[in-house]
Amino acid sequence: MIDLKDVHKSFGANHVIRGFSASVSKGEIVCIIGPSGSGKSTVLRCINGLESYDAGTITIGGVKVDRAHKSIVDIRTKVSMVFQRFNLFPHRTALENVIEGPIFVKKEAEDVARRRGRDLLARVGLADKEHAFPAQLSGGQQQRVAIARALAMQPDAILFDEPTSALDPELVGEVLAVMKSLAEEGMTMVIVTHEIAFGREVADRAIFIDQGVICEEGPAREMLAQPRQARTQDFLKRVLHPM
Amino acid sequence: MQRFINDAIEFLPILFQGVKLTVIVTIGSLLLSTVLGLMWALMRVSGIWLLDVSARVMVNFIRGVPIIVQLFYIYFVMPDLGVTLSALQAAIIGLGIAYSAYQAENFRAGIEAIDHGQIEAAQSIGMGWWMVMRRVVLPQAFRIVLPPYGNVMIMMLKDSSQASTITVAELALQGKLIASSTFKNTSVFTLVAIMYLCMSLPLMYLVTRLEKRAAQSRR
Image (cartoon, rainbow over all chains, first blue to last red; front, side):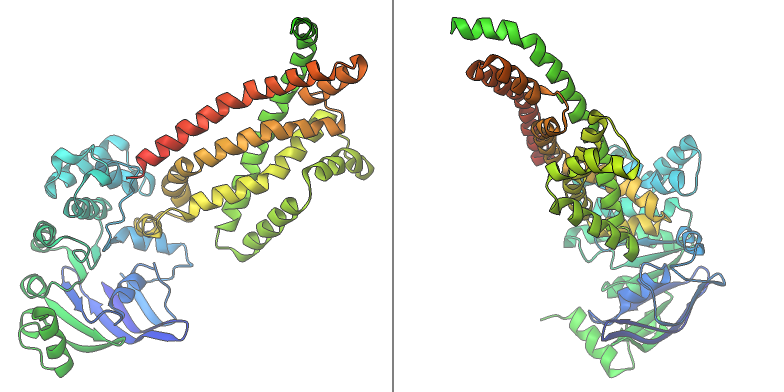
């Protein structure tokens, strides 16, 4: 469903992605791990055209991702994104955040969108918060609203860019629980994360990126428990045992 | 004092005619400067090089020429180019253009204050540039620019007196005309000053309120 072939991306002289190829099939959950600056977030941002790429091809359902082309709107409604810093619209309530896309991008009828929006908020455990503004919500609640907002687009896949990295430790669990329930329903997901245990439990496949290239890739359960490459071993050791 | 009151009773009706024009010039040029200023600001943040540069050139050009010269240009030079405007029209257009440069900088600051992550979030749900502006950026920028916008209103109210230089008989010019025909400079210009104050003090109060509200909503 999502195909990346030999993708390259530079920021000025900084060559952050150096030939990245991967594909994600429908219903698959892929988690991408790697040190900071390894290019993992950039890969994700290229997939839905928030970032342009310099060489190679990215296709979604056979359509090439080109942020200068009109088709990008269609691609973005099919592949939603959840951000590290939630990025909710602060001037709108939780429900308004969720129904913004369906009403103004997908031109859904307002009452239909509202009903579905309420269902989605209930699904992420925030039925009672529909009138709350983002500033009145905790980080974990904001991120769950952001997930509901992504789901409201009825996407084929969701990209998660370090969805729990900006959260206080005690709030991480509630977000991961929602993501796990999505996984169980068969949502296609690409997750950039440092939550190794979560990746091992939920993801089908893991990819370790270092310095813009895939260093190791394999079934998440095995690879995240017993990585073969020395660099992956070293990285996991440092993430799991920081002291 | 008694003399001043007698003068006031005599001159106020004439001065009020000036107030009417002052208000018309202020509101007219405020509206024009808002529309133009928003246009320059959107061009600046459009990400399209040509629009950005043309807006930048226009804004610097407008800022670099005194308002009074712009007014003279529109009123006295434009007829040579085949565009004849009434003094009132010329005043509104001249002040509107002159102030659009300041409005543009104000609006741009408001737009750029919006966290880029929100813009990306809006793009990620499929919004195009214009919809991102309309639904996400501008509603929030609006609240940010409101207090400085109020200050621009006060400045415009006072600067509308520059319209007198192109024969618009607004408050300042009416005062000058009465003063030069009656030689009652003290009474007349005191009245004129009081009348400007009566119009600008409520606006200042409004700005203070807006600033307080803005400070509160910054959570």
